[in-house]
Length: 197
Image 1 (cartoon, rainbow, N blue to C red):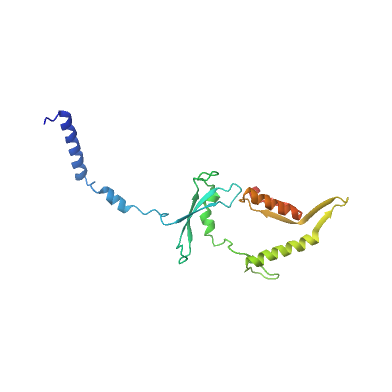
Image 2: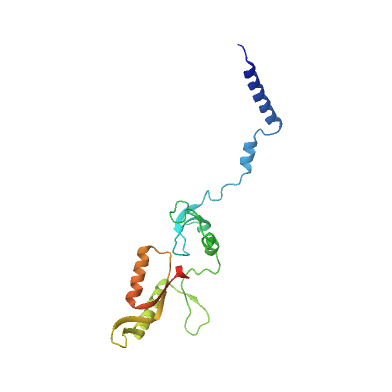
């Protein structure tokens, strides 16, 4: 079998390259590199999709948590990032949304209802049932006392001016519509939203 000059040069160049790589110590470099790479921190985490709570834009976020799903270990959120599949933000987050992991783990974060009894200087933890019942009771008392059915000219106005309402802005259109209808049905005129702040 006759070897052409071109074939000889190809085989020689390939042999020289292979022996040079071996001589320089690159054999097994991929295995060594792979052994030194840190494992991906979110590999064992549970991914949950949610909406950012900070404004009316409602950007999509991915929340990653670690913990045993069988309730042996308390789940803990370890990472929050923008959802690249969300149509609103396509994976981007503003500064507040990007810093939400700090908010989640803040020692100052309120996690349950608190109540300060009259004359007391400290807040005490109460149940949700107690908190909601108290809010409803106080709203009813204030509305009964301060409701204005007619103005000075006798025109029906149905106003409740002594109470205001501050709404959250990360609600859906439907939830926002129902909130608006509820607030206006009670006669409250002072109605503000988080998105305007």
